[in-house]
Length: 93
Image 1 (cartoon, rainbow, N blue to C red):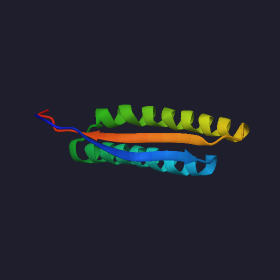
Image 2 (cartoon, helix red, strand yellow; image 1 turned 90 degrees about the horizontal axis):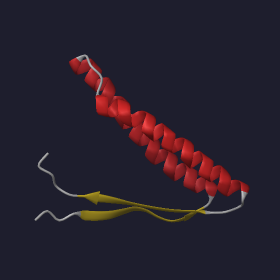
Image 3 (tube, rainbow, N blue to C red; image 1 turned 45 degrees about the vertical axis):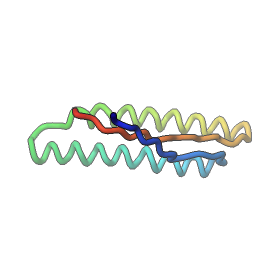
Image 4 (cartoon, one colour; image 1 turned 180 degrees about the vertical axis):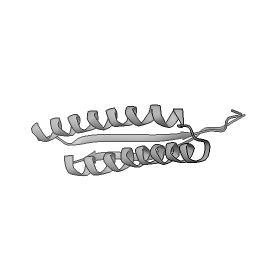
């Protein structure tokens, strides 16, 4: 049986500046990863990586939502509670 591993990536309460730095770094890194993956596919195979091309706009929309929530927290003088976990398991696919 395949046992899933759960890892805590983020767990805490943050002011707006720290929350923005943490979340923007994570999402920017993911966008950069997909941009490089797409570029590599174009160079090696002459075609775009479809998964990467689909994920980039999704991640950018997530950044917009993050910025909205951070602006709301700043306007209301509130902190942001952020939790994120990573679940890892094995697959035959």
